[in-house]
Length: 156
Image (cartoon, rainbow, N blue to C red):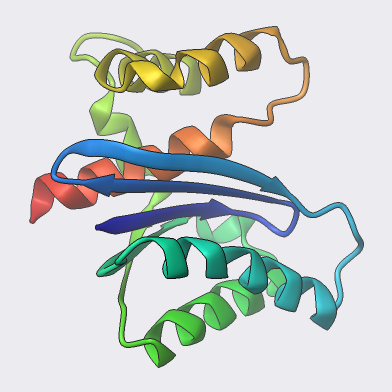
């Protein structure tokens, strides 16, 4: 099983894919201001996934370098260290790579990506419909996590 993670210092999108099927997905909101305890809280929120599923690989969605704050870099290094300590392989995938999942000939947008993933994984339709109504994007992190995990599974 592969766990995909799309995060920033506020939102954490998780997706678990096994043999091409979406097993589980979730979004976690961490509202508090940045602190060492927030890093601990984010990593602690990963523990149930690791316990409940037999995770073999983790794929992290990494945004463009100019979008990475020092806090984000610290968070990513802590997440990597957490999984490496559990002997779980960690891979990274640039966020821009996920747009290869958009249908050919269609503009590579977040909306197109979410629509394509919803066709592939119908259980995401609730999140898709909710996201289309949201003024502030919230569920995109789930779709990014599903996308990086899907790409990783396709490349194996």
